[in-house]
Length: 64
Image 1: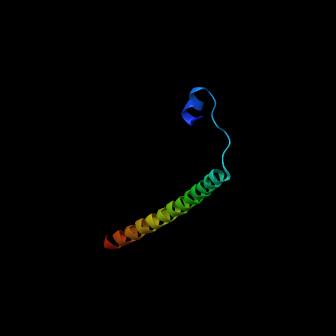
Image 2: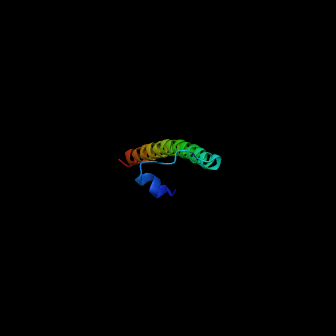
Image 3: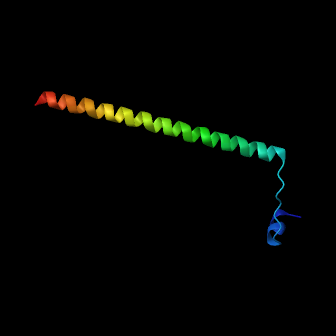
């Protein structure tokens, strides 16, 4: 039975091959690592932005 026919009849195949599960697990792990890396990168960008703003403020105070 095709997947389309199964869906139409209300029967969706729920068993998954070990390979499919393995791919899903790898994608899930990669997504978690990506989210962690993005959080760290965002934190570093904020630090650099704040540092740059402070440096610019100090240099403009010296110009006065």
